[in-house]
Length: 224
Ligand code: GLN
Image (cartoon, rainbow, N blue to C red):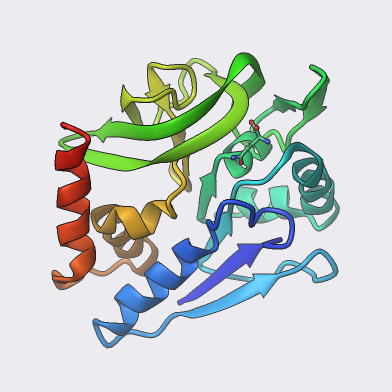
């Protein structure tokens, strides 16, 4: 399995590159191999089983969007690629996103989602109900995201803001998108395994690690 981390020099502000390490380690602990490639602005986008897009500030986010377009990433996704997108990544895949000053900037148009500037930044703990599970993380963004009809949110907000105070992210057949940093897969081992089972097409053996205990403690500490 090959994981490509896209433009960590631009979309690495919030440590989301750690998601790749978590996936790789959870594979390794099961005796399975995963390679991680960091793709920089100068590189072509390689073939990969999963692409990771992290969070970043407005300026770098614009440059990342332009470069992804130039490197035909929309075609890669339309061709069936799987993507985990966090915060700026979530906004980039949508129709447009706002940058400071209120300017709307064209996204990659892969998902019917529009991000406008909110009155206040959304900063703090974020918890999201996804089916019977709870996803925990941190958020720090100025954008508020509106999903088009027919776009499924990833889950409903229990704590914090997510897209708009009521739902967080979106999920399509190929894309998981959330506002949660952490890195989100380090804080939510169940979500890491959910993604791994889909990417590998395998039912994965359960794994007991300190991450599970920390997850439970965090959920309790948040009173969820
Ligand atoms: N620049 C975007 C915003 O502020 C995304 C921030 C982030 O990735 N945390 O909305």
